[in-house]
Image (tube, one colour):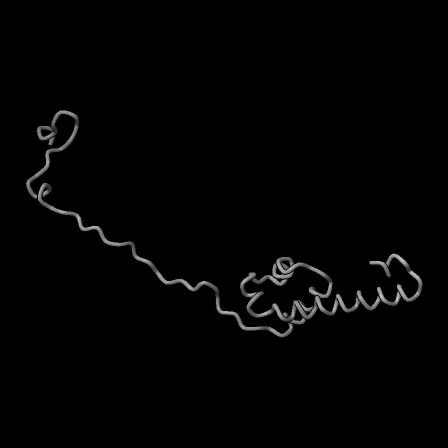
Length: 109
């Protein structure tokens, strides 16, 4: 083998190597699901409604519920919005009561 090494350290090419072509195949793509299968949980929906009522953002509620934002928007967004609506209704009720009681800054706001 030492006799076959040319100057520059390369091995001589055989006739078979010179004529052979390498077939380039496209990459193999495997299909992956975008999201895992999720089943709506009513207990989790109730907790999300409560967190929305407390005024947490959508992202924070998703983190607290340990679900992704896509799953949150797909399965639990209505519960979150219902909780936020309940919070706003409660705040408006208290503000009106205070304004009627003589709290001028609340009345102006």
